[in-house]
Image (tube, rainbow, N blue to C red; front, side):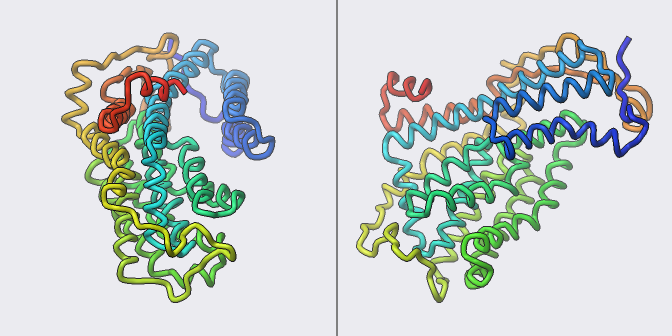
Length: 390
């Protein structure tokens, strides 16, 4: 007989909610207070969730185990696969000097440190959050800032601060897709509503970053540029979320914001550019990038954007699924748990099917982008595999 879900085991909505929040509190506490490594913090959160579920919510052990296996499988595909292939693409571009060209291209757009900060952590950081997520943009953008001459500690802190508003659409929309799986809500409606809710945060985040970096008066001096960056991001985010879905929301919004800010800085400059006391990152005599170098620096990420866009088209996704999708019911979980009122009008068995969509997942599109980049750069198969296994 299916187990019927319990929503208020303590006969108090407030206490039951606090109990349900305990695994998240343990996870965040282990990360932020105890400074444990992410995998140990995640394990502590999982153990806490199992204890709360078994002891308070009276979840059968078989269902608790099945739920854990389901989550682990989803963590490997698509999440783990997306992270792995994005890191591969990053290493390929770095190994051939393309990432250095990308870094220099950001430096030559403007010498103002406040605007360099926005270009790197807000625009490019959002792009990386959309492509990979899970800490990747913090590491990469902090490295870029340090390479541009920013002090290491502020660079890391600002990279973390920027990695906030883009998170709901991280890793090709994985959080939204997971939420849709759990709730059963219409994906397009869920995506567009979330994008609308985030629009104010998108607009304010550039101001927040510059204020944290150099003060609110300094942020006001570059307010027009910050409005262009945040406004173009917010508008694109809502348009992509409404018309396409969650997969490319961060990626396209970041590219539009980067392009809009770059074009705006061709016709507008701050009256008093902000520099460090001993600034060396943008020396006046430094040679400008050629168009070829500029294209080489951005090419891997443009290829990624194009392929992920194609993979996200419903017709393409359905065609790939028709020849590769394997649906695996989770033992001990599938149809053995019932949602109860008030979540549903009547008891409803909950399906738990893992879609092994190895070909249509966005990580495979990123792998193809890495293969195209490797072929273009004439990277030998041995070197390609070495980067994959590094």
